[in-house]
Length: 237
Length: 112
Ligand code: SF4
Ligand code: SF4
Ligand code: FES
Image 1 (cartoon, each protein chain N blue to C red):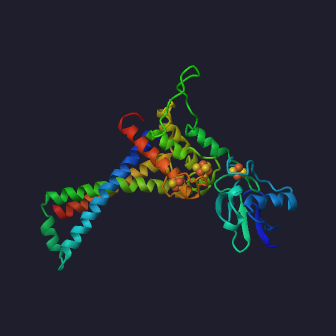
Image 2: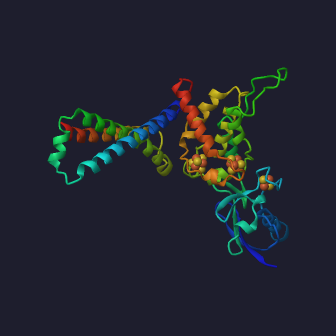
Image 3: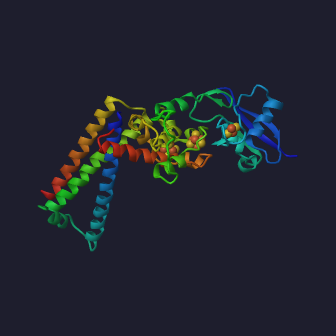
């Protein structure tokens, strides 16, 4: 049975990589490797996961230099010469080992007005939204985000400007801008345009390249740029 | 900056980029066309002197540069130097004025 050489980040920002040897298995995922280390080699290893099926968004790490969801990343696809280097996500403070502090990431969702603002009550009829309507189609294209932070860790503008709202928060805001049931469009457009918001995006597309759900935050942000520009020209911003 | 400020800069950046794309194409196209068979400074000046058309064209070109460049530099200053706030705004306005002055002076030199 072959063996993987795995370098795993230990400690905080000023930590270092520690080498482990993990037996190779069929259909092994990167998360399987980390779990093996934690169960058999180093019980103190800190990392996060929950669903193991690509739904919860908690297992993202930096694998051989690239941010990935580890539960659905097969070792066969990413190992180089039987080696793996596994670190915490970039652009976020490290709590310990592979666990990052995601607060700033989610605080930015709130800053981008990522909360749905209802316009109807439970006594109203359910809204009817035609599946083919342009707003519904635009929201659909961006709605499947699992909040994994892979895009955020891959974005150079986040690295350069810590105030930047980042791809995931802006992508979330875009789904709501297109939601006909939402009543906070104006406030949301103001929130995403101000400061280092949608206009700070350089359209590098690293987020789109890396998003495991194959979303395009870049396209969502471009939509926000157009929507805020149109609102400004109409005197509504 | 405010939502209105950021969005205004974004529109100005896009609009000036569109103007620049056109101006650069015309500028290079005319140069390649005019330079065939050699071209002297005297010949250039003979065409540009007193030409309201070239004065307007290069005036617009210079204005677009003075709008476009400082907005781009602003992003560079924020992201690479961590420079932001009032002092950056003042510096960029001064730089825009400098580009405008130098550019218009050059235009003046060939059309007046
Ligand atoms: S497209 Fe925008 S949000 Fe996405 S990685 Fe590039 S700069 Fe960041
Ligand atoms: S947009 Fe994609 S990469 Fe970013 S948090 Fe959502 S699922 Fe993850
Ligand atoms: S553990 Fe839930 S997405 Fe990977």
